[in-house]
Length: 138
Image 1 (cartoon, rainbow, N blue to C red):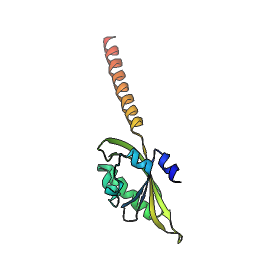
Image 2 (tube, rainbow, N blue to C red):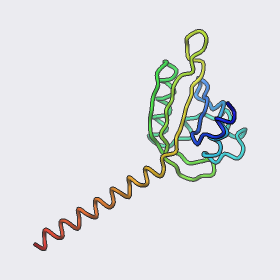
Image 3 (cartoon, helix red, strand yellow):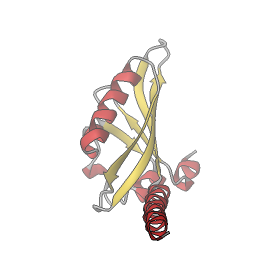
Image 4 (cartoon, helix red, strand yellow):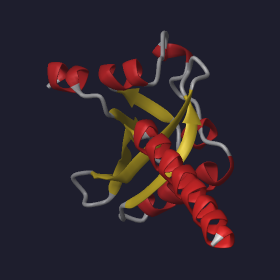
């Protein structure tokens, strides 16, 4: 199991019911550029997110506490300060009593996809502008 978690490029985390980080996979530490996990262990997980991502992370924790899954996309910097865009799935880890005992969060780096979407939008706007100029000339 350890080698499986280390090989994954997803950031797999366990968060306690208070929203604090209690585990991050080795592969997750790699993609999040975490050099010392102990420095962030126990930190409030929503605090890693800014703006809407912070609100979404807080909502995801509430949903998981209630036994539901929640998915969101948001921007968060790596531990080294590099900006990334993440697709995040959050859900409860159910205990023997049938109640949530912790929260599982799996984050996938989708930065290259978001950058490609942005380039596509810019190209589309440029094409629209050139088409308007061509029509105006005609």
